[in-house]
Image (tube, rainbow, N blue to C red; front, side, top):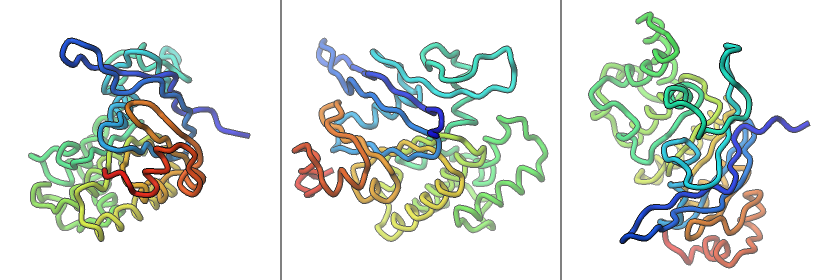
Length: 268
């Protein structure tokens, strides 16, 4: 029996005003995401994939369509179940973002607090859940540094002293420490050396499998999609032109644009 839907997008769209006219960044995107499932959103630069990611994470408001999320609550006074993000208060959306969701930025510095230590970056999200005991926070930070293969002796160092790959690992630990059910990832390996990318992808796959995370991964790299995702959306000019199982789309693409991507004719 299939699990209940975790995230549901229906005819999602967002436009921006360009030279006095609306220009759709993405439009008509629909899909369901289930617990433990990884969905890759692929396409060249400007295809609308990052805008879609921000709509799903409620960082932008939809101009048309809707995004629903399966909200869990511990109090009977708050609604739960598959709820429309547009109808949630900003306070509740912030709570989701700090606890039940993670968001891995393309540039790790955008997802870290650069003026506090690596350990404090990890512990900060636990404090949103009410954790206050210093030793427990530090112990959990050490645990997560070990899990993402960071040197625990660097726990008190500022993120600026970390390499790019280390910063990305720290950002991942910061996001996963609260055991979210859903993680959004925006080009998580871009800008890293090839060897660093490979190990980071292996680490992400291990953590996704171990924690049974659901994830939406935006990438222009089809190798990332094949390694991490069971399903894939292909976007062009703000629209989904093809979607389905990742292996099927990559091994037997039907849409001409997907065929171009797979044959590496298009550049990122």
